[in-house]
Image (cartoon, rainbow over all chains, first blue to last red; front, side):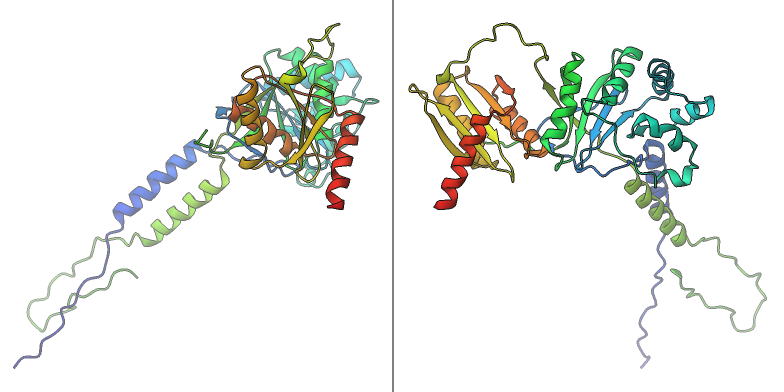
Length: 201
Length: 176
């Protein structure tokens, strides 16, 4: 009797289809990607049931970190360009052309304006280690007001968005809001994460 | 490798055949690489757009005679430290009834809903956050108003009287 041989099976898989799909997804992610911009502080944003989306353009964002530092963000480079030249004129800040160009590339900044020239002269690599002390909001030297006033004159359509960490104290938040109110700005968008709405009500 | 060659190599004797070259390419490393890149892009990009909540404040300049609130249709909420919430109503005699609660569903939301049922749509809520409360508390409170559908709300500065009431409540708690 002949020995029964176990039939050898070929275990090779055709990977072509999988490969096609993987690259299709890869292409999709590369094309739709918008890189996360590094922020000078960490923000753990509170959640709310609001479903309105934050518009991508014409937003002026003021972020308040949990230790009370205020940061200023303008997304469009063209707006930043007009803001810095107007600010330099109005508040006698001396910046060279090169420094202004460097400023245009910064999406977010949070330091007293006298720190700006020093910060702008730093090489890119060491900028991360620069201690950003936050934009002063106190009543003696309210630079945040100056920045907002400048930005609003440059582009009156700017929407003011406020972003805060969960542990930001209400006092710091109120200080920023009061500064805006003194300028007659009373409409804000608070940036929040999505949270599901309770169903039974 | 993913492919094992099971075909017999050279047969015994016979004609010399030209060697067949397999046209199959092993795709495994390529797939590996593709998935690695996908993972990277998924983690490095911001997919979810952030939401916004509208917050309107009254302008700084107060009108000469602010509209008066009827005590029976108003309630005051104080946001305290360590996620505590206090609220009070003022009755006819002017004595505040003071309570403590929290941000849970059974807490402040229930209070607001009950009060809304009694008073109706004219319910006005004054919120006074203490300086020790956090931004999270503020957003939570705004959220509760959105959920319960209370339109008339205002965030005001805390007064010494309110702080006194809170201190009194807390000392009561401590003695319990």
